[in-house]
Image 1 (cartoon, rainbow, N blue to C red):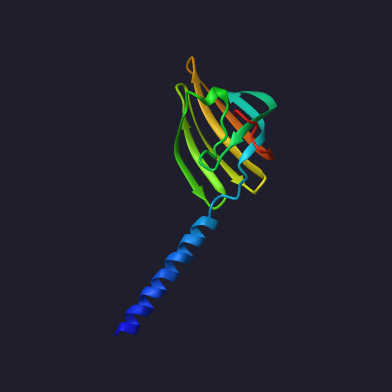
Image 2: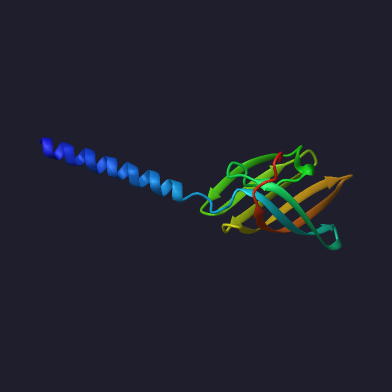
Length: 143
């Protein structure tokens, strides 16, 4: 009886060690530090559409905050953030807009998209953004 209990305890401990190891390795494959984000944005309002525009910015990324943000997003709330493998998805709500995004990280790069709907003066504007990012190095001190 003692041997069965001892074997069960050993198996249980091995199971816990295995589970802890696999949970750690199941984290998002991303480097923390300074990233450059490239955005290609297209907008439509009713039958009217604007040609795509591109923009680049840099920001510091951490494992705790895997959703890229800009200064214009400071009044927005990130809701329903989900992580499945290396893909992070989220929903964002702002005062006059709402959107959904998804990014897949691959170590030192990422690709994704973000869709946002804004209502201004009774008109609905839809924005679609293609996201691409690359790791630049450690964050500058003070960032």
